[in-house]
Image (cartoon, rainbow, N blue to C red):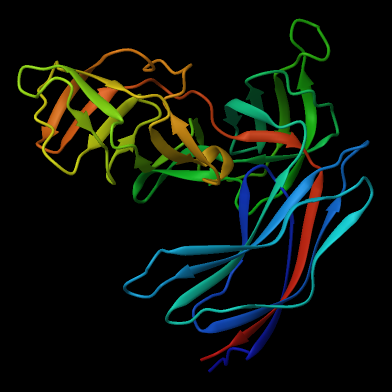
Length: 338
């Protein structure tokens, strides 16, 4: 019978991509020591990216499960060209007990980040054609990072969604598609991201997770059954469908709405996190530029007394791309406690 080693040395080496990455999470039955961690500026030219390195403690105790405490080892540390920044040089202990679960995460801020509007992936060759919302400014042989790209793919459980790339890796641009022969304004490039022979992937817009809402987020404007002027606060269970544009609103008290009634949304009253930056930053909707801002929108369906749907607008983009500017490496000693 094989016996698991009491101690195990691990090395993690990844590019620092847009959004936040969880580098390591202490497994059940172990404690771990981060022996060394650093980030190097590997960008071309005079780039001055910054990095934030976080120790995250998540409660797994019954009464406080899910509560998170973030302690930043360094915040927005600047890395000059051709230089590196040591994040840990000694011992940082990560615990996994019946009460807490520790992890480390890294995020960076850099220049040249562009939003992705479409990705075509050939799973038999690995050829990946990426289109950006605005000109990407990249060239052939540039190394890049991408993050938060959502693909749908078939599985034994049906059509599922996955976020690419995971784990984080860098890629090299093989071809830049010129826009009508005009160099420098291209929005499309090709790279190779590897082969997955049996699984075709289809690009999908960003996924959104509802976080919270203001108490007066939604106002009833016309209704045959609800009181005009009533304020509605969405709660957990509210879901936004990126491809359908439908917001399914769940309320804590009966909404009293009927199909065909009209409601309006207060700007920046709904808080979501989205896959575009790996669910890192909170974002508030609707923005003043969103289709539902400042207008009445009708109730499409009434699911039940506490749930209704309305159209708030489609999402067409998803994911970020930028030049490779930072690389992270760390060494960890993992100790079995069982």
